[in-house]
Length: 415
Ligand code: HEM
Image 1: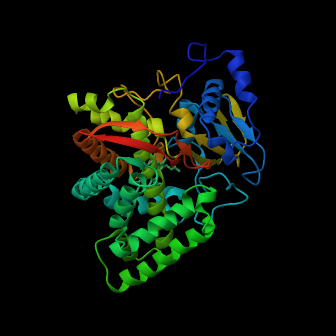
Image 2: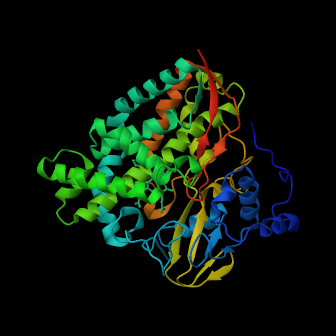
Image 3: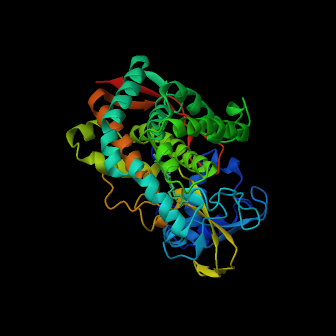
């Protein structure tokens, strides 16, 4: 089902579009905005207008600026840009209400300490390691797809989507198999979006439980080290137990929350293209291109936040030092200036310069793993599934952080 775009043929700079963009809401952090497909039109218009937009305090204590175009998002995240992640990288944090993990957890640390942490963690998530994980990933994907085929009709968001990334991340962290289901469930509660379905415990209670679990794991690895990430972080000797916990948490969240939605979204994306799987069977070389298009089209990381370290000009406006600035990645990934027919999922989209994994020094460290998971999934779907049909509309998470699926009911027709 291709998205319709009523403005498709219009001049990007038309006053009508700019006005439409400005008429949108006063607090772009309001998670209700992201529950319906209307967000795509909102992002399209903001990206076309290409001006920083101020959000009033509400979802964040002091308000924040937003940018949407591909160029502006790239500029905010660029290596030399005068911005820091150390106050936090999501809406809710700013210079006056900083994230307490700042300067200690990879994704909210800059400079030399960021480089050191990245060096420690990279071998576990790098391409080489992803290749050695290929067998593990392939086995997990086959299990997920054959379970789904057995029932025929499945809610991908509740079954296939969560299972693969959780298994891979637990493998990297060295979480014993018996504890995995519990950790996946906790991650769902903590980061699944503030939806009523996840109300067994509050998100922050679930998050605390995850940290408690890691604390026990760290204690176990201290007396019996392995060749996993927890043991490596511990062996560095310069990180406190709390620093180790923060970074385990970073990998757990980074690996789970985004990847599950790109996997679920892969089913959704394929269902929008007639004969998609037949075309991939005829030309399996397309799988590489499709992986990138899945990341662009699904863009599960919805925003990243930075704080300006000096006065900075973005899209023609000077934002003062200390300003929190949010880059909306799915908006950049559907910017009409960069991506022709941006709302459509194209199997053969050429030169896909998406920002789905971010840009600059914090560019996703798990990108190779995410790509490996999607490649394995596409190969198995090509081999075993004739076609994918949606049996109901997708239901979206109520979240300003993760663009993801609450439900995606599909019917799988076997080969
Ligand atoms: C960073 C997206 C999968 C671990 C990031 C960032 C984005 C992102 C946008 C940049 C954050 C920033 O600039 O502040 C995604 C998407 C994924 C994915 C869309 C899947 C489709 C993974 C996986 C892992 C992972 C599988 C690990 C198993 C990380 C880590 C960072 C990161 C550790 C921090 C890197 C740093 O700060 O240097 N990710 N990610 N991600 N991601 Fe991912």
